[in-house]
Length: 113
Length: 111
Image 1 (cartoon, each protein chain N blue to C red):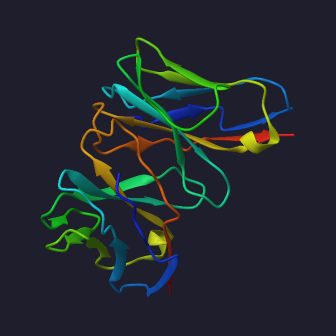
Image 2 (cartoon, rainbow over the protein chains, first blue to last red):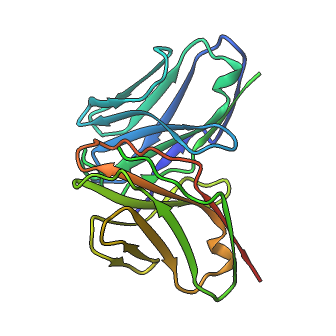
């Protein structure tokens, strides 16, 4: 079975632009979470979605939004990009909304210039 | 969720056991201890979790003290591929997918 897949793997954007990152969970997993990892720090929780509903939101500005589709894939959108948004964006999937074993993708490396 | 404290770095010789400590003195009765690791340039990988009993799987063992205020992750025979950042995370059972990562412990396995 394929693991969690994220696209694109790398991305370069200009300040003020908008970006959409995509995540496909492991087959059968209904929960998707998004994390931001700035260089040298641990991942920071952004969102969790379960059955297409937002179940949790971290301390991120409204420029960050996400959604989950009927096939449980997910998109993370970031508007009005800032230099500080440069980071590795990680997607994790799990079977249920409660904390169980979470499987992470390889991430999308976003660079804002 | 309870806060955790881990040493910033540790070294281990290849083939020896790696014992990674974690303090979680404010842990509550319904909070679990989870361990993840992150190898350079990869996403985090789940290792093991437990509530109060010791746990073992094919990757590692988790030893939780009787008062649950600390735990130790044991990699019984460390290899070079175990070099990674190891995160100890304490989570309520109803935290709905939110993992709070700290700085973790950088484990370096030497030949």
